[in-house]
Figure: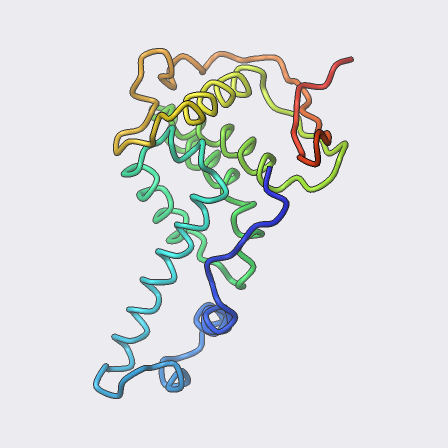
Length: 204
């Protein structure tokens, strides 16, 4: 588990992002343009595109298993949908990432014929817990089948399987249609081992 999340944004970029999403007009952002030859509106558009690319990278860092499952193309698509639906209001990107699993769940509920999004939402929930838990005895409840899928995907990644353009969900044994039945809930709990933070299924 990661003890700290590293944002891809410098302090200056964070301040600029805050101005953009606070609704500031382009004429107020003159100090941020590197050249007067670039029109204000174009400079703002370029910056916003760069910001969105950075946010997508940050989301990928928080949800690597989800990214590998969906695939590069699908992940870029869903990140763009998330940014369009709910752009960051403040430059607090770990907090912004925390809402991503909920967005995926709602996105999947609106598209029940596309099972991949609801499955990905559950994987993202475990991903976020894995990368942001910071102390012993933190807990999260998840469905057992999604935990097993997450473990399988993580093992594939650790063995050298790379995220593909189309995603690991293309494998017949990992297809989202296999994970539509209700499953029992289990509790994952964090623990320290050799100065590293891990989690496991809690025994009762």
